[in-house]
Image 1 (cartoon, rainbow, N blue to C red):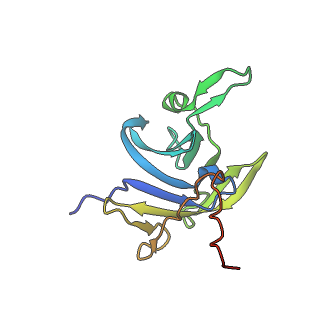
Image 2 (image 1 turned 30 degrees about the vertical axis):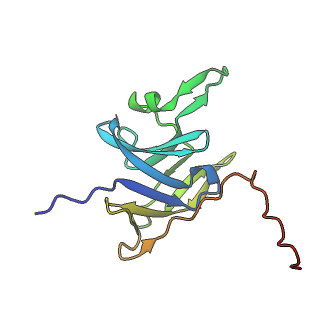
Length: 154
């Protein structure tokens, strides 16, 4: 029998907090509870997708955050030590892998799209593995200038 395919990357889209949407790549060297984690760098922010120890859900957490005293925390180390921190977690039901919750001043439902890359560079929908999902072209931050008008054109 073939070993189950394992995703090397996840494409996650649909969170209201846009900083969570993107491509998370496997890091086989950074484990939580023996399960590898997936990492996404978005500008200066780094988030990671992990399965908390003893949980049947996945969490997405920033790598670093401030604690209640304003000190800097490494949330990956806290996850390794069994704490469950995150800005989003799911799925809420086995029937709907896209039903997650995200924190936006309170926990609110999010319906996300998840694509899996098994190593061929293409993302296939978790909900419908026959469907390929194209990652969006992420716009660079808004410091770009509009091209000047061509002379003589309206």
